[in-house]
Length: 265
Image (cartoon, rainbow, N blue to C red):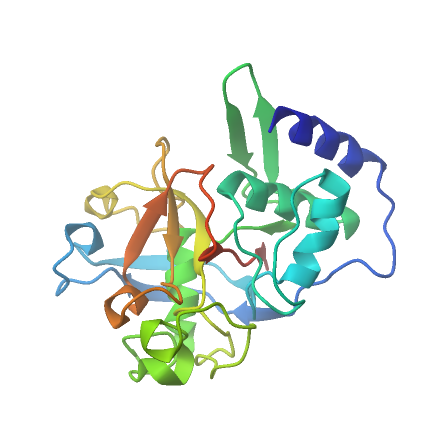
């Protein structure tokens, strides 16, 4: 990871912007207040549900695809993701996903959202809140977008109460599929339930909701694991629920875990 980090840092400084840079297809999510969490869940980390207020932001219609991610991998010296061009890019660590966000910001002439530093033992990532570049969604932003934002119809899954309409999961084929092949949610966003889990910015804390941080929450200030959301092609209907929370070590990677990007308005 150290060699990759050094190489990527040098690359970001010297890379010129070209007309062929990948630009994600983004959807505006109008800010507002929503109830985050689930009082009725049997999982303790989903409650107490609380009112959360978010600013406007943009979120990608689709999970980052192989076609989008492979160019970054070639320049950074990382292993390229498998699958056809429109498959979600998976087997990506949390660290690699924030590096991709910084790279995507830089080549498109935007301010990077993360300051990434490394000492002999650790990589640290500091989020610059006001930056206009690409980044991972916060857990609150992810959930608000998944429910359909201000257009929500309060479905159990992102876009429907019938999971086969909007999600790839165990009952619809135990394999990863190309993005955008199921119906979108109320905001026109695809695959927020099923297909691949998605990294969020936040550290995971199973009691974080009890702190009642309600205004544009960024998650716990410290931690070890990072949140991921959305369920995957390997999951049951239970894992597809919008409020269901997952977490993994930031250096973890698997075929069922990818990400999508957001930007500040």
